[in-house]
View 1: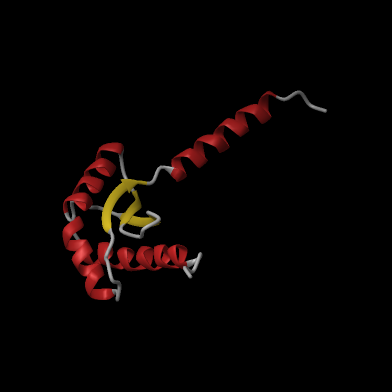
View 2: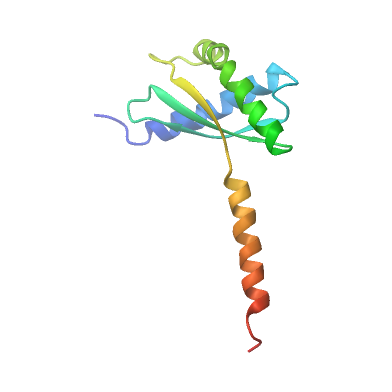
Length: 118
């Protein structure tokens, strides 16, 4: 019987391990990248790694490209650090969650300003 929470626990462990690996890489082309989340496929063989990067849009895209280019190295490091039957294939993506949150907050502020006083 499969543990229904295994994928969640594994995703969290991968996020922590990947955070350390990315920080250790120290590649200036990657910049200040933070692993914010990991989403695993149901078979646990593929992982979407969400990263947040400080800086302008161009810097953020370059950082994600560099991480994507280094994905084989990162996967090898994961395989060394974790005792898994299969180490997931990695795909790095820019996490835009914070940007969306900031946009929603700004829109709510605008709506609040336009509301007539009670």
